[in-house]
Amino acid sequence: MKFIKNISYKNIAYLFSCAIFFVLTSCEEDLTKSKGLQSKNFPSTIIHNAKIIQRDSGFISMKALAPIIEKYELIDSPYTVARKGINIEFFDKKKPKIPGRITAKYARIFEYKKFYEAKGDVRITTNEGQRFAMQSIFWDQKKQRIFTRDTVFVTMEDGSTLIGANGMTAKDDFSEYTFYKNSGNFSTKKLAESKK
Image (cartoon, helix red, strand yellow):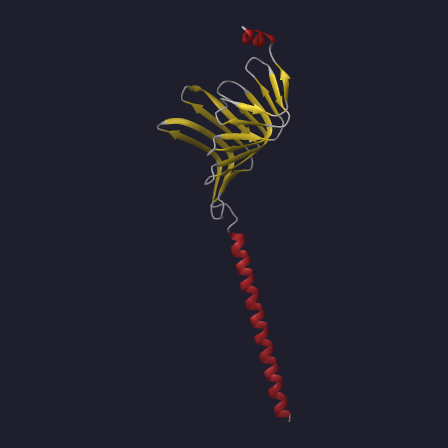
């Protein structure tokens, strides 16, 4: 009887150790799977003190400065982000010496979708000298449209102002734009000239 008891204890100990091994192995596999999913959500490229120049047929079309740029390329919807702000100058071939400018505290670019967003004290100055201020703006490059639902403050070259209380939509070159629930003050000289 003692011999049978010893065998049964050994069998129980063996089965118990096998069970622990399989539990630990399955836990390891689950951890590996979860780590595998998490490991894709990290920047594949980090650029400190980034200075980017974009050319179009030899002509400089854009210059960008950012303290840090991170590219997330290993996920389903790759994007590039400037978490500490960005300063972009964009150039028009007709007015190469007067660049437009965009500054923001945060920017993100979805390269495949050609969709851009900027947030936090967004300031835009056009090649014509118009100045726009808002908290966020989005640019759909495929549709060549920019839009925001934030209040937009616009200052013209002559000092007149316009406020779009519920945002605006515009062509991406600012050749035309529409404000929602707008108000403002305009130069009387400008109004007089427009009536002639």
